[in-house]
Image 1 (spheres, rainbow, N blue to C red):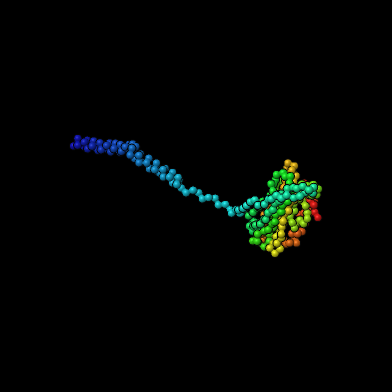
Image 2 (spheres, one colour; image 1 turned 60 degrees about the vertical axis):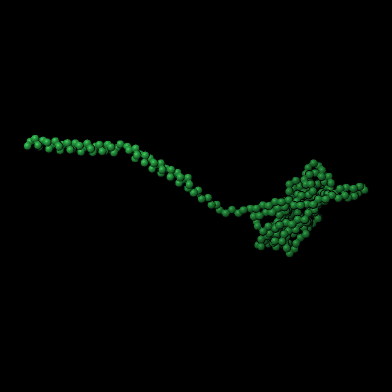
Length: 268
């Protein structure tokens, strides 16, 4: 009877040892890295990285920055046609002399857009080279009929120069009829811009006149000018009478400043 009891106790102890040993072994086996599990885990992480990079690569570009509207400005320049000829005239001593003539018919477009400037440039014959023969030119100026009232602006360009001796007896320019019989000569490139008023009810026959007897002193000479036009807004109070007064003021102001500008201004 006692031997049977010892046998039972031994069997129970053996079962407990096997149970604890199995639990520890299973735990250790779980701690051993599984090559297949490691491969699958690495593939998932790699695939996730590639997916993020692909999404980043093909993500849409950012929207462009929206700037406030900026008014555009257009500037058009061209060179107008001046027709030149040469004639032979008799001289006081019974001989003959060549005289160059040039002329042009100008149509100035009046722009009704304050952000658009249309300019056209005209030059006297062989400008700006030295010359020894006399030169007489005239340009007839008209404006387009797309607006009722407007302003024409005349700018004398660089290197324009006429003889300033003998009260402009050897060369001058004027804009008729606004300057009447005035004569302007010398370094006319220093002259400020001149504007005249136009309206469809009283169109003006405007002529730019040039007479130049030639300096041939090795420096530039002749006349180059640029014209542009613009429509006047309805609210403008400019009138013919105000414009006529502005022409007179401009000419007298030029006469007062002529010495500083290296000019000669002869008024009637």
